[in-house]
Image (cartoon, rainbow over all chains, first blue to last red; front, side, top):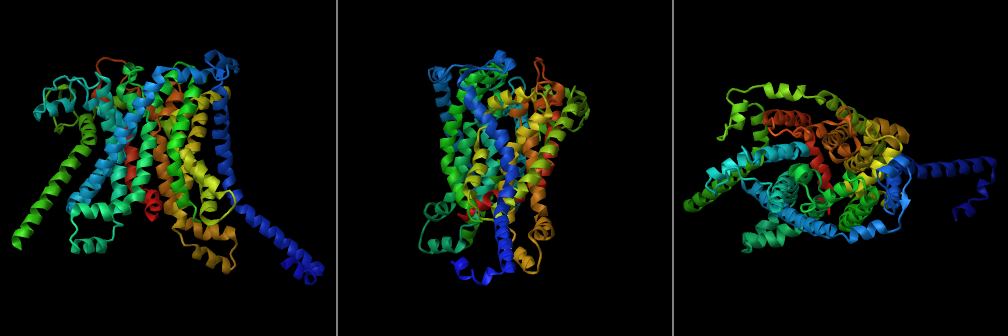
Length: 322
Length: 281
């Protein structure tokens, strides 16, 4: 509308060129954000997009070491998928991973919540000490943590067996923690929860600072007790944080690889104690059956994708305010 | 009244005792690693453990450092980490500016991409990355690993830097623009200096994630002379029946030291960056 009304005035050569310059300026301004995100997009597109295309392609091919050297797979349609979906090991692994994830996430969130509430109640010196300890644990590299836990739970002279025996919990002399699948996965769970707690506790504790003290006081004046205050005031305020932490934990624990793979140890990994990532690693990479591995990968990506939708949507809402 | 106060004090002491007990349990593995690393071999294999090595020895550290490929693999880790972080931080900063300062069509899609990629299970990508990199002869080469790491470090850096940028008031830039600065001028004179701490914190965190990464390094690098230090550490146990626990713990300590130091420096800032979004909702 402005164009037409100002057309006459802008009829001069000067006006036109100014207008044209302004047009170009505006177009350039509009292009700035695209220019800024372009490098990241290109890198991600090439390094992630191309392999993802290959992932789909591989999943429909027979692709082993021979094909890898020849650079040429053999198309087999959906055979890889049906082979995986008809494999009892796949379903048992999926079930085991789901249970494993549920246990890990529940333990992490419940203990994390309790520790955060404890942090509020202790004296300052204990709080400082405990937070420092948590940060120290948080900073431990996973591979290092695995080695330390392996040494502590070692059956010959691990300190865990010694302490448990001394405390009178039972006779743990030369007890082998890696003898049964249940025991193996329990130790892995302890290691994962131990490693995940610092992030969860510190985040929930930061969230607890958001609870307005006058609201709690008002509730106390009205005669509310600790448990009610927690349910009706603290929990609703923490809800968004708890939701994000829970979905992050689910996604991480479902795809966990390093801790179980290294702690259980290559020698003791069998199809009887696979978790999803390990199943994929052993069947696809270790046995060099890349086509079948690709099919497993896609199934796993789909599952995690479904799990992530809620989380990503939540985060996008936060990121949308420029 | 005084009875009530005494009751409260007893309860406080109770909570403190619980807090200290939890501190001991949580920190024990770290303590045990360091303690073992300084003990003599007799103390390590003894059935009744020594809690504090009163006569510390450095022998295990010497053994760990003299193990084959330790220094080579430390160097590999440093190369991979530095290159990955340097490239990522520059590219990510540009994209973070776009996200924090501009509204544009497709913005939402980009945010979904940035957050979504961080959620991908890494194991799900080892097969295609291995096959594609093998086709271009980039397996067993540090370049292949650097490229792989960039895909994961970039989104993290974009998202974290965006958080830091949102903390810088827009008005500062607008005032400079009114004073006749160009956008580029504002960027260099105002945004960059203010972002200093954020850039450092993000780089350090990216450094830590890359230094700690295991599965891609394990899959993509085969030669012992090409591996990173985490893979080196994971192979430490080897196949020998009698594990050299002292040297293993010394090696673990050595691997952890740079990470722990860096982490303690920046943890506060990053913890804030991660949660600021969540708390706001």
